[in-house]
Image (cartoon, rainbow, N blue to C red; front, side, top):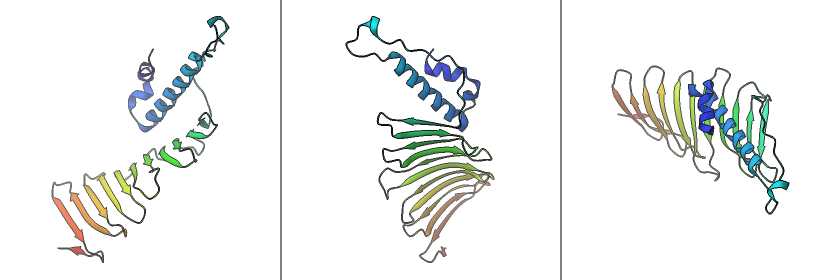
Length: 190
């Protein structure tokens, strides 16, 4: 059975929630590691002398945290529920978090992408009790923000490099569109 077949065969992964995404990532990674380990042989070793690898047939693994390391032993990925809320964290070679995906105590999910180059834009996708949000930030204050709230209002908000709001583009639940511009003092232009 292929990896995609395994994922489709597990009912919780068909629901397409963030928890299911995290579960499928772990399953795919685990299956890939198991496949790589079971298919590895020493170059030049005759087939009858190659080590036979045992295939794990357990249906589950229970732990609070799983850390995946690279060939040098550096932690590159952490799957954790140690705090009670599930989280997936990916790190660079220096231990800096470059991607994190998590659920909060109410079950709202967020994904944060951190630029590996300091000072360049970051991105966050999040759900909360107010709606759905996508935010792009840059050190120093520049930011843009796209949202859809629970009442049906959608919009985009733009801040300049000093962190001052400069422009709002809004579409109200009744279909009315609003364009709001702001000056250096934060006052709205007519």
